[in-house]
Length: 311
Image 1 (tube, rainbow, N blue to C red):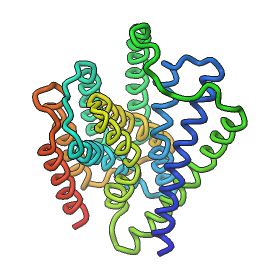
Image 2 (tube, rainbow, N blue to C red):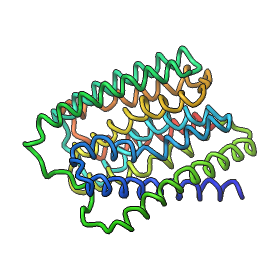
Image 3 (spheres, one colour):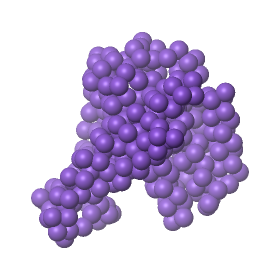
Image 4 (cartoon, rainbow, N blue to C red):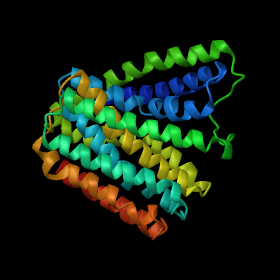
């Protein structure tokens, strides 16, 4: 019971802490005159993945590396099948925005690189450095492209309130910086205890409980996007999150300590992750719209995957 409470409390603190940190950092940057474009490509992108990053780092420090890898692989699977499946039940999404296709192809290439690194596992600092170098190259290219088109849409970024009082900005920052490591520690500690109590591996806990929990912010974002019929926002959110999970989170975590690669990842989970990513192709390229039928199929496949993992 204590382990369950630790997991629930840790997840809640993580999500709240991550939100507060992003809001505080965004408003601080805007108040200091940092362009909104740079804020969106850096602070928001990194900040929204802070919970997953802290979980992975804490997992390695607590000698539960399977939890770190399971969190990333499981989150990427959940981001496609769950995070896009649920919104599709709410509203039909007309997809096929050309701007999304380039990011999608980069995500597929990153997935292939990630699988190769896992096959050479355990993932050491060398593999982490490679992943981070690729991420830095991608971000540099995105920044240059976005800056080149900044005049076309200068006011599209709803990032924060430039009039937020300074005490509130600092309160958000401090609360986020305290909450994130605390939440991550509680969540990982509770998850490891649950794994030991039920006789399952930290891989299973990472692929299921932790992955679903850390995908809740992406799910909330895509549900709102579906209600507003903003398919490009829903797809872009998933693609961006998956890309940073593979390169950024595992890259940084591997620099802290080696990440073991359970043979089950190589035999099964990595290929499910790749198949889920490839399943986005018809929607990214506009061959199909994301309808309720597809949403039902995605959710059914996700439930089937969870059953196979747990059983």
